[in-house]
Length: 202
Image 1 (tube, rainbow, N blue to C red):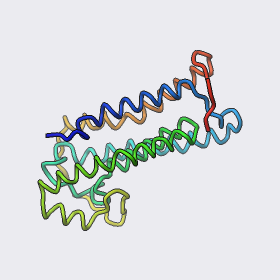
Image 2: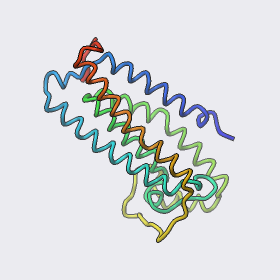
Image 3: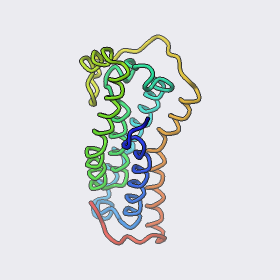
């Protein structure tokens, strides 16, 4: 049975993103007006992070499609971090925030992540501990919880994947790209005068 955190995670994430997009719809980037080169650099770094997060989540999904809880996945991205999907989600969130050409939005996203996701990670690891017992404890002892340790990387020669579940996970990984697209639509709407810029943010 899903915990309350797991049950409401997606609706809460959608609600939070919607509120943030509405805020951005009424905002303008102070950097773009005052120092366009800074705005361009923020967007460039953001796009790189979004690309890393999207490709990384697709890579993670290859390993967990159909195996997330039933089997203890410890290879590929899961050999360098116990929670690579969440690490990449953080990278993607910061990337999307930087694509707003501001520093305020990525800071807000970072704070929201730090306040919310440790509880999600803790609940999921508690479930894995119940299911896999000693095997999970050994995995915990060998693998960092969040930030990857590349030196521990290992991967199998071949891997069995559920294509239906993998396709669904790939679809989810594209959310970061779509959010950047929405930010670009909002920016164009501001430039064309369809949306007002009631305030500027850094």
